[in-house]
Length: 121
Figure (spheres, helix red, strand yellow):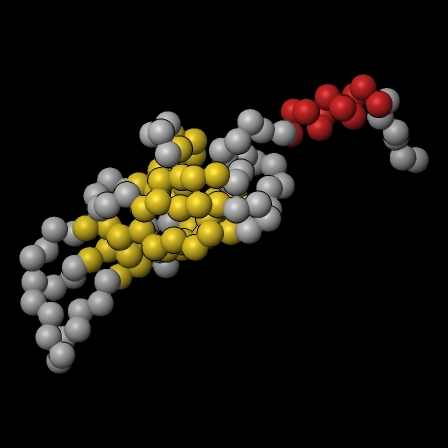
């Protein structure tokens, strides 16, 4: 037998699932899909030894354009990560490397590559 919730209980449940922007555990259909790559991996790159950047597992912080942190995600061993976000402008950061600006549009996932600087020169 199915139970039907009263209208007020349903409204409260829906309100609890909503968010005021930023990351959420709800069913947002927008956010960022990306990969963290670390490099350089060699002090000298040549045609015989191109030494490409490698995928890297690390924390990725998601900040608003004003600098407030809204979420943290973790890239896997393949460097890949996915984070659901409300539409808006965000900055992706790792412990080392340059910030990456990302614009998330409604009903879409932005693509981003976050570079983690190894310091090898």
